[in-house]
Image 1: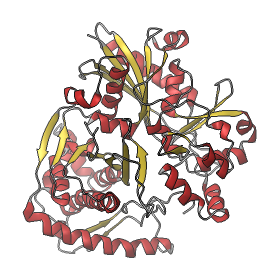
Image 2 (image 1 turned 30 degrees about the vertical axis):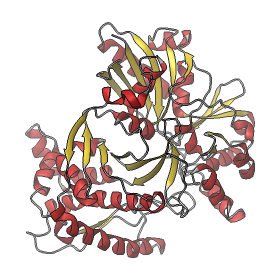
Image 3 (image 1 turned 60 degrees about the vertical axis):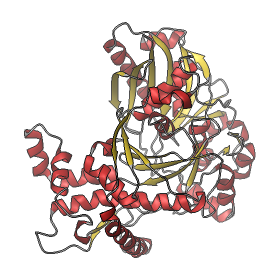
Length: 518
């Protein structure tokens, strides 16, 4: 039996996952890491390449020791998108930052003031804005770390940093590299004109572009000594975490739609052509599958919000669950299941619907609370948070439908939130479409493994063979009796959010999050 190794440089941790050639998960190891904040540079989150590679090496050794008769056919990589690494002309590491790096506020403001139409032009070509892209960060590097910028010859993503550490030359793929804002949606390649227009030296766009599933190198002797991996094993091009996650849940055809419910909730709708949103509100990415693109929207912090509620508002329930050897979220869900749909008209205000052009959120709030303890208690508030994540998801999918012309006929639901039957049913009831879950929960790693299998020759056509790797778990069907309840709540939420956002814009309240330059 041959095996496949997927390495993942995530926002909060590094991971190594081994699958067998049939897609069965065999072993997983993870190490938490943090990013380096320099107080001289507010918002900075530098990625420590040397230290974090040590964590990855530990993960590789751990998973390798857990699999009997390990026979690796290929290794591939994935990572948080938007995180970038810069190298010199001899492909030596110079500098890297994580996706959460927000140091380039002044660079965004300067670009918008000097060239008011530039961001729209970049979006029309690349599908990206300044909010998360590499352009402001590279300009920051040019202004503040001039020596590093002068020596820099390559810009790649953190998945490419992993591949290079394994032994591959510097390369980049569209699904991850496209999040720099320096790729052309039509060509799926770097666009040097965009760099020139922004004042970035185009030589930084020197890394060759390969599609996911391509062989890009072999495990080096140096890597073999560091990790215990056998030298010569093929290294396969991976991609961005959300796009590989889409493959890992089987969303590989035009029109397929997936929702990934974690700390953030991502909505991915597959497109057969690189159509952009004329309003600029929705992000357009490259799918990891060739000749496929994605409309992407993001709900901020649903997973973090329910964790805050568990820890800050319900510490006694958390302790009770731990004594019962149960997940605290299960007890909270049991309570919330007894609350009627609509959560007794409580309206949570956390994430706004996606507005990639002007990305900011109101202050976290609960509106329309009641002083009746039997109507408004912790169970009501918790259910309102579950409903709110689904409602903002609905708002995002509506915005995507406005320019694609269709609302998804079904949703594939993955990530931690998909483990909750109540949350799955609420999503189905709010969207009024079937919601499917999957057996394998490590969707991103599985998607990476699928491409590793393709690169190793185990798979010839992913679309034809994906069902051999991705198995359905449960299908949740919408309750039509709840349709009007959630429609009314949705409209009230939209009206309330506009008022709350205005309060944050006027700095009467404090925004939950703002993109650089907002």
